[in-house]
Length: 413
Image (cartoon, rainbow, N blue to C red; front, side, top):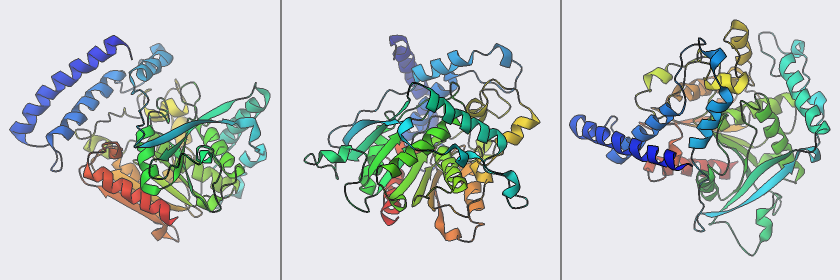
């Protein structure tokens, strides 16, 4: 991070802190469970996020937008890799050579006519073509590697067993969490989320493999999904039993975990034993009411779908103008997983902050899940007054409670 950026962050922190502190003592906390420290952190984060990118409401300036530069500036101002202290755990960078993972491209071909009446095909013709093209590019290219981090919490790490830092089971029936980080599909890495991943590893007493999937706008949909699918098949290839694997993710990573589950369901690949999504995006085709209702509480400042900088549009079709066709494509289950079928989904835990802008994404997702034959397999936990991925506020009791629940869920899989 450049010196100028550090100076700017210091200025923002100081100016926002003064105003927020006065408001806190004059009007009281914005929400009942907030203390001054929490409100200050929210306000500082919100101001920084709002200043990271232009705030747009329509396509009037789309032709003049320099998307590569906008995204480059966002990444330059993003959080650096998180340190992992020895008392928290250890990690090992691991590469997945994509050519070593056997994929039959015919898995991505699904006849839409084979679906039940009224159902939307999980893999439509356009997505099938894109996935096939990504597969062919991997086979023809020089040899691509997906970077991952294997994180082992200190409470389960034994330095006498170096095999713990290799992605293969230590014993029959060992569990593994496959984790996808957040960041709106344009920023983020497993390294940025190292502390959160280590907390999940500690609470679940399970090793966690964080995946650095490809990001937009350089690699729009379905590149990240393709990488997630390869990573899952790699885990199985290394000897992990599918029933012992839990797929998890936060925010955009939660969206990716949901989309991957739909893809695994459609390709008839072995389904994993559990799914955990933290504050997930679940519907890319609409602006939910909570995006307006909770805007004054959450630190996130999502742009409306009409904006060319909306997460959905940067993820799916960067630079493309809004149209009915685009909305229709965004409604597909692999893009808006809440609109899919959940008949073959594994046990699922959904956690959300009740006051976050994506609150409706979780509640509506769970409502769709509850319409299946086994509604008890899907659990929604909503935490009062909490924000987007509140789990990262490790000093908050709600974070400890939620992460403890994740740990118990994984142990029960």
